[in-house]
Image (cartoon, rainbow, N blue to C red; front, side, top):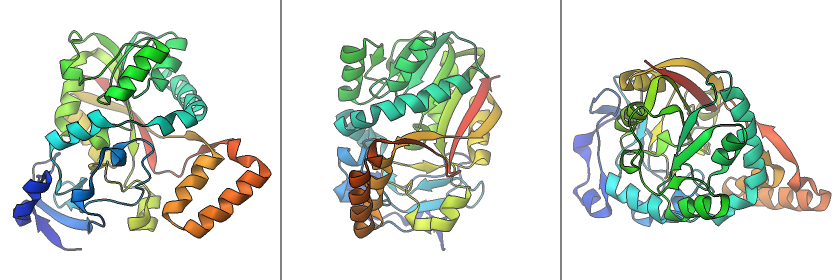
Length: 315
């Protein structure tokens, strides 16, 4: 690995909508390259930013801050470009796994009950409203924001949910009006996560709870798999450890209460589909076997230790 600073940016990056940035946690410009880019920035399309994106293992240059150890994509798409890509995302394949996702969120809502009483809930990055449906059934008064116009419209029209196609800052919610804010697999996508977390704090009541999930780049899986770790993706701009995420939350005005492994419930066929990025031959064999045995529709809990749920309270 070699040292890298933001001054090394290629002048042509701006033409591609890329920008080099300092560390979002400590502001340092000194960083070491962890992984070199393995795809062309010019190939960025909205499909690569969908939840079910097939671009597993495709990523830009990933660096680690020499001061605080935050990992992030650098250079990365600028904020305006990211906004355009997420607004344009349409992800109908997401709906094919809806029952498994509902099961995952039912499990998550039960865990939430340990940290937050029923009340008014805001989900940031609500997508098609899957979590909000579960939370509403559990007794929460729910609202959401979602950049994808297609996903927000689906949540409103199909499930009668208050999901607004905008950011939390522009959604028109009163300050400190939510007992609980959730953010499932979202914080790693932001161009400026520190500012976004501070913005979240403005809408949480004092003593209210903020729950979020993201990848844990400090876990065993990324250390073993390195560039083949599936969560190194074009859509992910930041890669947190429990320590770096806790520090960022504290700077935003939260006190971390717990960091727990995140369990997902998925169909076997979904797991098999992800094999194609690693071995097309193995994927074909596994697909054949699941089709012959009928195991593809089986739902299984998955936890490789590289996903975490963090619960924090507004100070």
